[in-house]
Image (cartoon, rainbow, N blue to C red; front, side):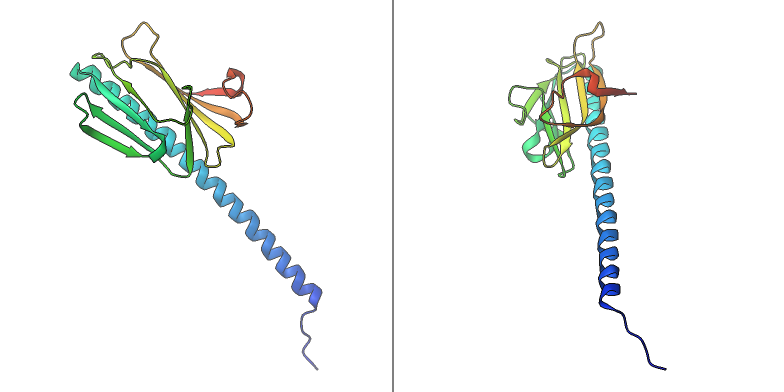
Length: 174
């Protein structure tokens, strides 16, 4: 009895199935990594903003929150420009604001009561800046002395070319 080898068609089918499996698994892992980074960035940003708010409220002092989108950092400073704390945000996520220059770094100051001098919104996008996933909105217009921080998740990833400011595209997270 002789040994039968594999035919060319069998080898091609095996390679095709292996390639397709690798493609789907790697795509799934990449989506999971981006999702984890988005969640980390959202959570860390909100915790950091609340921390600064509480510092201002309890210490009755003014502080500075600096958004460095260019370096993926949030920096917490006192009024003498001394850094109190900073956090590094995931580099595989892009960030924009609702300011005129959406990609520019900016600062906000707290009042002595923990509120901010102006409200702002931060949007979390994929690194290619094609899809918007989260919105963190800080509103200073309320009857309380400290800001209201709202977190919104896109009902579906929103194309950057769409009107991502449209409220019907967002659902509020608790």
